[in-house]
Length: 383
Ligand SMILES: *Cc1c(COP(=O)(O)O)cnc(C)c1O
Image (tube, rainbow, N blue to C red):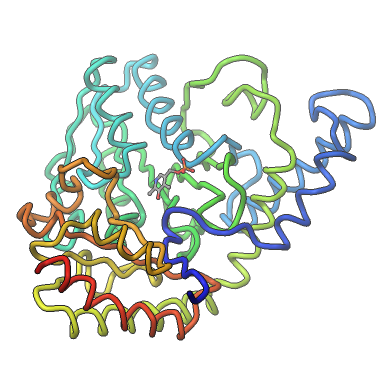
């Protein structure tokens, strides 16, 4: 059998070698607690400060606007819950807006804020490409709207949302704008000033950094109630001893990603387009999901009519090809992805989903191999 082929970079990316190197000294040598007064503490604190400055440089913000968290999900939780609880405390309003194709880290948090905490939620529909229209956001705005959250790019179908336009709508109505940039950050600019956003979530393992660490950018002046309470870490906004090695690794990964962005995006889009053109032309009854042009450079996602998507993933795995259905559904779960249903696809199509996401190590030869085997696999599953 040939070398296995990893086409699931939307789920996680390998840790870049430079990132591993940047983390190592912080485990066994530089192990102090950054909050301690002595030299070990000072050294650890200096490492965290350096990482914060490096993150802030890529995000084009000031270091105090960076909060280190444990993952993208935590950043999303802190953004929504933190802004809404602060707005309730100050009596500014109880209404917030998000879209129906958000990651579960947003969707489940939003529903809990509605159902358990009693906030008012407008969950916006999307068009057939998964776009959230700024007009639709405008129509949902109310005098008591305090937060709008729309993802930068969708993790399943790759659609890039018009976040700056949506931010303008939110700001005109006096609301803050948050974006879940966890999936977008490996390929799109995360310059928060240019994008004009108030809060932005990142997770390091989606941009060649380690798992278990993330960032939430919060524009200075935006009121945020802490969710994890305790010590005064992260200027009182997120308690817990800083994870120095992982924070240092995330900052290196972010810098590397910014440096490589142009080159990565060019390479990824060429590989992606070969997948899209090759699959649509060789597999009958296949459709691209997500926007045809406003999509992440590394994302090729499809539906095939009357195919069991889980079965297809297992057959691909046997061929050494790691892919995803793009949905959260596990083997045996017959429900189609909520994102695909939100596009208006019937279950007969939505159940046959496939997401291929390329990365830095993907080669032309690997794409050739996928294009060789996929049509036959789909045919045999339909027979
Ligand atoms: C992966 C992902 C998350 C969750 O990030 P973790 O760091 O894995 O918790 C949130 N949102 C989007 C869009 C993602 O792709």
